[in-house]
Amino acid sequence: YFQKKNNICAHDRLMKILLGEYMYRNNLTTRQVAIITGVPKTTVQRIASNKISPRMDTLEKIAKGLKVPFSTLYETDF
Picture 1: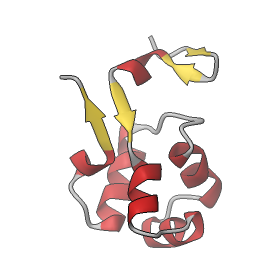
Picture 2 (picture 1 turned 45 degrees about the vertical axis):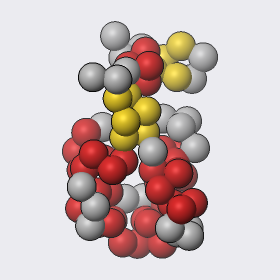
Picture 3 (picture 1 turned 60 degrees about the vertical axis):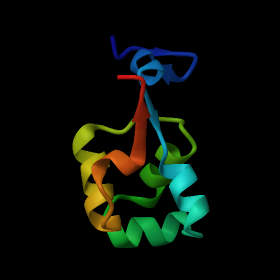
């Protein structure tokens, strides 16, 4: 279920990660988010550009660091 297909995990169709959009709207750089959240800069960049799907604990760590509700960072059809 989580196997990569064309660099996109199958579960991406159910949940869209909004970190990149959040960063853009709030004028945040990858470096700033990495410092604020404690998540490595390369990981933040890959999540923001939708190259990888974050683990739930990583997404939670980002939400806590940015002081936003967890649901701010994703949207789903469910």
